[in-house]
Image 1: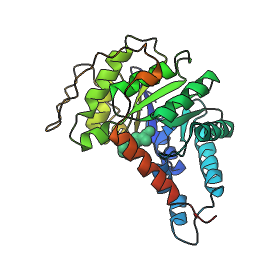
Image 2: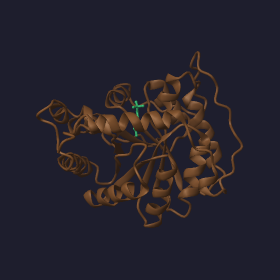
Image 3: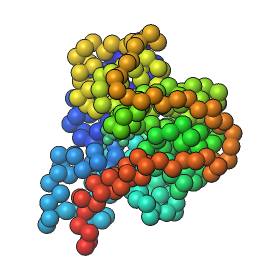
Image 4: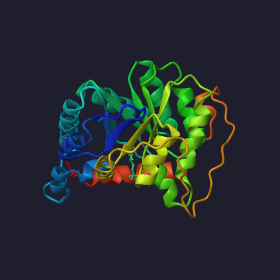
Length: 290
Ligand code: E4P
């Protein structure tokens, strides 16, 4: 059962329908699911396609992803399922739009994941203008969050998710949870059309801290959600103390939300590295000669 005082929506970060079933059973609810190419490559059925001679063709992989999203969507009819476009450094806006529009035909409750890069922002601007839903991923800075806000202005609340990656900032010695606090503070001055979805959650401390900060949504691995259910679904208040050791602070920046979206300095090495890894994991499943 969903705890009455729980305001944050809880998503599962994964691509295995069996795991989704287990989590729904343990929690008694689930508000949505996020997928990405690396998670897709870890799907038990997809694993069999990683070996030469049994790889997906370039079209069969989309069919596999489609069926997976349809299975997840059927389990989460009132929730959201995030489907990520293939994007590497050469992917054009037109190629992102083509994938996004196709994914949107797969299920009724899709949020299309786009990288927070210049082409990704342009695609988000077009897609939200068409009334579609997006989840802007690989976010590592407040400037990227401001650019997403500006690029999607006019979208309805619930149509735009912003996914800052906490764990990957921690990995390089920065306190990723401070980015969440900073974005929530910056967005408090806005119109509320972008919802903050805390992603790359690696620990119970990340999860509890995101609840305490009032993140709109959290996506977390199945193992963590099962552990939270096992612990009785604790929900800390604003007094929760999160004090990771050895992580450098990420100071708040006074960034306005009203600039043209292309005016923000959005480049970040972790966004580029993240796109390279996602595209490599996707390509590891495909027979490139097909
Ligand atoms: C979810 O939308 C993200 O893709 C995911 O949380 C990334 O997590 P990771 O940094 O552990 O790969």
